[in-house]
View (cartoon, rainbow, N blue to C red):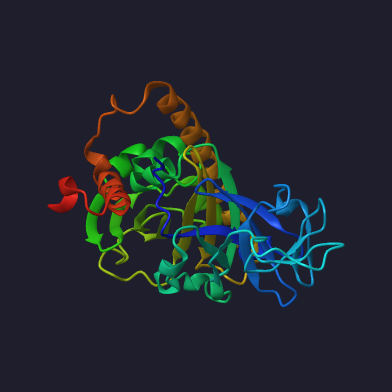
Length: 348
């Protein structure tokens, strides 16, 4: 039995990935083709022609929809076959499954579950993607050879930053292990805030902002099930009031992490950086984006190797530690979504 949560919105692509050509993706192990009609509206179909099973993504977009590259059948945005070369009558069953798709905040979201339950109001808000003056943003997508849950695990326990990322955004490991942390549970996940007061700024902070002394540093994360993590991070010179709430100005940025399962053991990692400092210097934002990308590639290496070991030995031998508190709660939220009537979780 699949462990996917199908009745949920997942990111299938950045909006600017889908232009004049069809794009193939796999979401929850479903092969999907995404394309835009002549008016620019996005559509998503199962990536398989109902004639001989050819992936529609091997075809091209035409005025009436997407044309199979094998024998020329054309399918509209609802998945109906609207043209068969050399044949006037089109069989009623000549169609392929279609999926609800919504374009919002520079992303394309898809629902691969029961279409009647696809409520667009459940899609998260990412206003920084629409505010280029205050929050100029850049984005990318990485393919990860590991479960989307392992990537979210990675974001829920930030004590790894001082080890994996010590040369970029991490810094001193002891600062992360000893961080002040507050966690609040929400209806759809959790929020946590970490403070590293009077700490040495990590290399990336120095490179892109120019800190010369110690800083008060914060990290606010929000997990929204099943696959979204919002991050607001920043730092000010130590003792200038950040911890007391005076966080305007200074070095701060938003990062969005969107994890969409491809298969049980692979995922698509959609991420963006939106910089709230030196906005009129695009080279600074670009430098931060590049260093962030290098950081996330370090996560990719570790998660993919972790997946390989878990495939080999299973998970029963793993041991949780104190820093796993947010990660454990995240997993419980996911399990409730998979099994909403499970008695073992009803009392939590």
